[in-house]
Length: 453
Image (cartoon, rainbow, N blue to C red; front, side, top):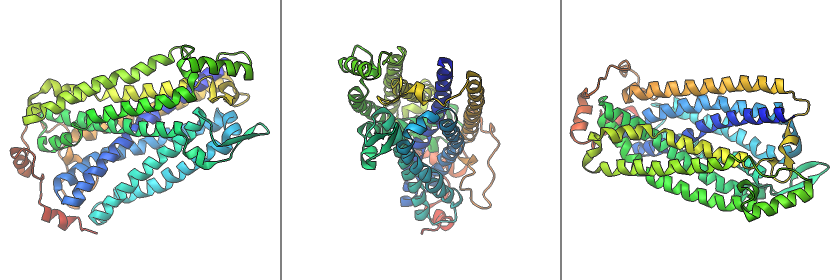
C-alpha cells in the first residue's frame, strides 16, 4: 500500500508541476499583452501593434499546449484518487465545474475571437476580447484555488453519512486560505511573464538581431517593474504564511507550538500516527525565497543600467537577464511543493488522510504504468512548448504569424539576421531615434488596416 501511495503522489506531483509551469507563464504573459494591446488601441501606434502580435503569439503557443497538461491532471481524480472525489466530491466538484465552464467555454471563446479577429474586428472591440480573456483566466485560477483552499482549510461544509456536503458556497469562495494563495499566485505569474519578456528581449539585444528599438520598448515595460513585482510577491507570500501557520500548523514541524498542539489533537482524534510532512519539505520553503533575492538584484541592476541606455552595451548584464528566466520557475515549483507536500499526511486537512483518498484496489504496477504514461505525455508537451517558444522568439517580431495582414511579406528565415546586422527601413529610423517613435508604418496607415469599432 505504501508503494501505491508513493507512486500515486509522485504521479500527481509531476503532472501538477508541469501544468503549473504553463499556467504561471500564461497568466503573466496575457497580462502584459493586455497592456500592450490597450496602448495600441489608445494610440494607434504600429509599435504597440507589433508588440501585441509578437508576445501574443508566444502566449497562444503556451496556452494551447498547457491545456493538455490540465486534462491529464483531471483524469487522475477518477483513476487514482476516487476516494477523494467520493468523500469531498459534493464540495470539491462545485468550483472545479465552474472553472471548467469558465476556462473551456468563456475563456476559449474569447481567445478564439481574439486570435481570428485580427484585422476583422475593430481595434477597440478586438482589445475588449483580450481583456475578457485575461479576466476569465483570472476567474479560472480563482475557482481552482477555491477547491485547493478547501483541501488546505475546509470551510462551509457539513459531514453526513461519511460524506461531506457543501453548506455555504459563499464560505467556500471567501476562504482566506484560497484568497491569500490566489493573489500570491497571480503576483508570481506576473513575475514569470515579466522575466520571460526580459529574457527574450535581452537575448536579442545582446546578439544584435536587428530589432533593438522593439526589444528596448519591451524592456521599458517590464524591467523597471520586475523588482517591484518580486517584492510584492514576497509580501503576499508573507501574508499567506500568516494564514498557513494558523490553518495548517503541522506543515512547519514540531518546532512550531501550534503544530505540536495540532498533532496532539490529531492523535487524540484519529489515533497514533505521523502528523507532520516529510522532513525535506522545509527545504523548499528556502528554495522558494532565495531565488527572489537574486531576481531583485539582477533586475535592479538592469533597470539602473537603462539610464542613458548603458544596458545596450552591458553584454554581461544582458546575459544575466536572459539566464535569470529560470529563477521564477524555481520559486514557483518550490512554493507549490511546500504548499502541497506540507499538507501531508492529509488529502483534506484534518478530515481525510491521503491513504484513504486512494482508489481502492489499485496495484503498484497499474499506478507505475499510468505514471510512466502521464509522465511521458506531460514531458513531451513541455518540450514541444519550449521548442516552439524558442523558435518563434528567435524569429523576432517580423516572424509573427498572429495578426498578419493580407499580402504582408513573409518573414525571413530563422538565423538570417546575423549578429550586429542593422535593421532596415523604418526600423533603422526608429533605432536612430532611440526607439521613441513607432516602428514601421504610421498611425494613419494603421487605422486604414485596422478599423476602429
